[in-house]
Image (tube, rainbow, N blue to C red):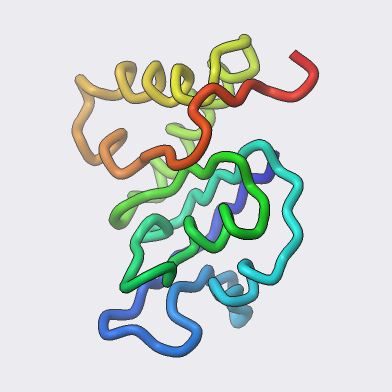
Length: 136
């Protein structure tokens, strides 16, 4: 399992390097992720716009799947920093309790439904939904 919590950038109109994650002055581009060798059951891309994609496979989610992740959780739009911390905590609590990836995601979303769509709606799962925490 890998969890990346960065600022995501998905440039309108695209570019040769397209989607990227930003931390300080450093950038990690989707084309770099395509070439990575991931052995992760789950990659959680906890970054704004990390689930956006363009034509074909131009995006971080598809790059992660091609690189070897079995499942990816990403966001479709901007995530407020407060919820970018609390939502994953809820997800991981349920996943560590033995729920599958999709069940843990749904449970975290249901807990946040009363607060606001801003808290739960950006997150979605792509890939194998029945992934469980390794060692469970």
